[in-house]
Image 1: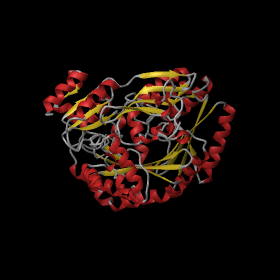
Image 2: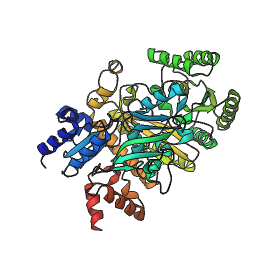
Image 3: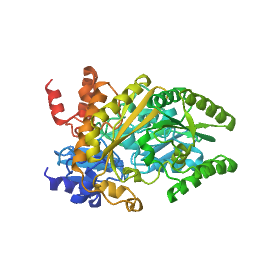
Image 4: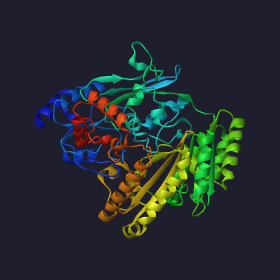
Length: 532
């Protein structure tokens, strides 16, 4: 079929208004936070899983590549087309909460639902998800998070989104609906994940290369009655990493993370209007009015300057169901943090972050209006310091060139449950904003800056450094979230495991049309594998 025939048939099944052909709009949907490659020929916005199924039945008979897109917060080419002959399926209109079942403690949502929407629906009921979202959760969606390893809120105790999902519904390339978990059985409630082989896990972290997620079910937990916050400063990276590792392994925290000294500029400033709102939210979050006034008062008078200059800072959120239990956990965490020369500092950072977990997405740009490109390595605790040091050594080799064109970096370390350690270097530079930046950040935020001029030299250097870091992560067998098109996942995979995955891919997507290039399954890789 030619383009006109494809568009005509799509308009018939999902409506003319749901098929986007305008060039500027197609360009917007084709870019992620970091980059753009080709502009997709068309973008469609179905509003139901039946419409997605009907659209895929048409597209699977064409020569279009099919690219799922969630909230648009990828920074690793998760949905950036590698060919113009692509159709982007924007799932943001599949955003309904289907069922909240407090008796059986689960929630079922459409995949375009944001983490913020779920949080706000459950909070008045005294319920929440164990892992309940990413920092970008006001825009990031459930489908994108399950496809790309979403981390942060609750990760210290409960892991990632994929560690918590009970089941999914996925539509594969030919329009067939696949169900996983207990939902795959007749007359069953979706309350359990693993009855037989874990097919739910199969579709997690696939970067959308195995199908389009349209629905997901998660377990619920009761909101902890008591929350506590701790922050500590460290003079050296060695001490900060050792402390975070010990805290993470203790299992005491819902979140625990370390910011490097360069991150201070990106922290919440409680002296401005937005910061004042955070103080008020802290007041409301506390279990008692007296505790609320105490915490809000302390926060209001510390401001942003809570971290000593040149210090690494460790931040924790600890929860429990009684004040006595919480006090015990806080005491234990304090003892652990101090063993590695930690100095107690005001807990403004974790407190403000938790009080307003899903603010408007001004963080798509940095505190100085800069663009950024993040990378991620999940490593064993015993490798955490070595990997941090190697990243710093690598950056030092580029120091002169980075300074010459205005590139700098920050490091974020996160504890994942008790068994894994996440390291996230973020490259930052001043450069012209893309349409995605301009549409995502609030106009009031953007008005505080003069848009930077194009900085092609910095952009090219970021590409170069990024590729070297990705190569280093691959050489040590590190895991990464947001694999997208940035990480050559298949290129480093154990061959029998690679063959198994390719057999599965061939079954659900026999023409390699679904997000071609993600996971390293490019057209060339696909053709070479078929010859073997």
